[in-house]
Image (cartoon, rainbow, N blue to C red; front, top):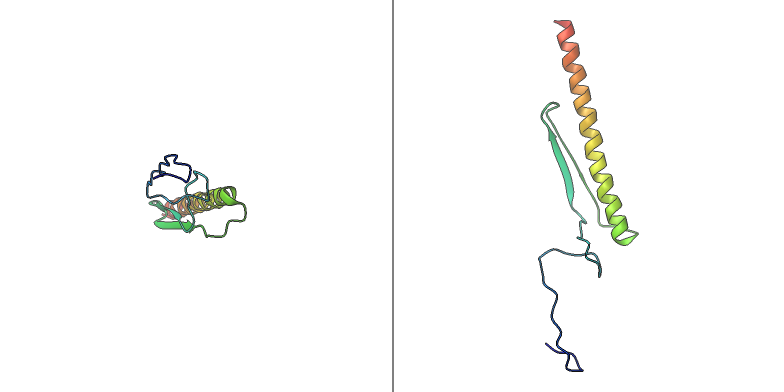
Length: 92
C-alpha cells in the first residue's frame, strides 16, 4: 500500500479491540462489572453507558464509578449479612 507520493504505508495492526477515537485507550462503552458475594448470597453488577462527554477521561470516570458502586454495594451487603449472622447467634 502506498500514498500519492509513493511512500509505503503500513496499516495499523488490528487487535480486535475497539479504541476511543484516535487514542490507544480501549473503548469500554456498554461494558459492565460485577461480583458475587458468597457471604451475603448476592450478585451485584453495574454497567456503563455510551454517553461520554469528555472522551477517554469521561469513559474512565464512568468505569471508575461503576467499579466503586460494585465495591460499596458488596461491602454493604456483606456487613449486613455479618450483622444478621451475629444477631442470630445471640438469639440462640
